[in-house]
View 1: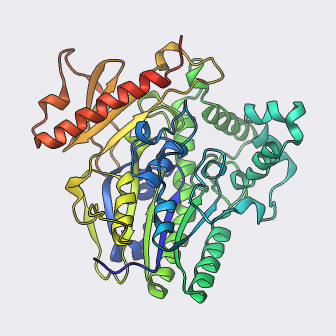
View 2: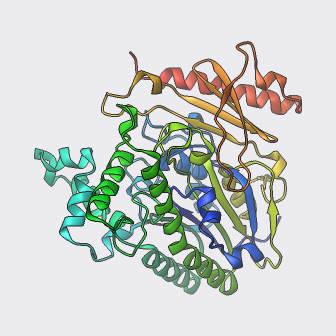
View 3: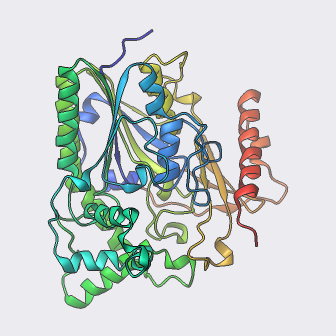
Length: 451
């Protein structure tokens, strides 16, 4: 057995692409010097619900059940918070994203879920609020309906504070208060934190503002944000030109620039002051025109699933870089091993070759108007320097992305090709991969909307 950390902190920057961390020109000196960084980590899901559910369960989306179509984590699947609670950890969540709360069942196992939007004052003007609220059709319909006074409506509206202003320092302050209080009471802590600055609309300033200068370009930028959020490319020909998709990508890079030092300082303060296992990652990535995708639903591109991942162990002195492809869902197993939960032995920081990068996506029924060419579920996996994708009974392949290189399109394989069978790997691992693929198809057929 290894010594349990007094505290486990899992910090997620929502929607943060891997390349945004490096193209912004701002690193995390302390984490890079002391921690373990992974250059080929991939999330199992491409948006917050499946991605976070995989972090919380160590399972693939078809196993934990939380997808674009089901919208709920399987109540029979135990979560990380529940498991750590059973070995004596007080469990806390401080979040800027309403998705990680009770709406989809991701609150299960937490002693406390602190919704940061309920603890900060609004710092934006009414025009900014109007633009955000009326950019979301779901909120517009609720606002104009008889349901406007319902609790869920007020919760959803209030949560939009985190779309309009910085809240990460408020989250860090709250996190330190929780850890200090638990230290005083001699309690061990599992603390999950979600930051929204890197999520749409990609915070380039403490309060919402556009990156464009002229009035007409400002309006076009706001219109581009509207089209990205509402994924209008799924329902009609994409109105976003590459110029505006590049601008949205730049917004995320600037958002990361505003986050990086604060995250690194926060990690350093906790690591030097406490016995803490600190993990920083993204729950998924984002798409800005990569392989014709916009926004982060329904795809398995590297833009949408390749994520930054850093692990900072207690008392670590020397950092290292791991280039082996890994799945970020194995953070779950790494944490449980360090906390001596049952007989968990898998640790991606020590045996990254045991990890298997598998990504799944489930098509998004965009107000019942999604075009036929997007009506499919997908599963992809990584082996060595290649990615393999199954879509509508057809296999495709593409090389992995390295560094900050642009993503290559998936190319179709011969119709009789089966990359799972063709892999030169251990028979047990090949069988496990085949089992996952079979289960994915069964689950996919079950949840796929009829017609």
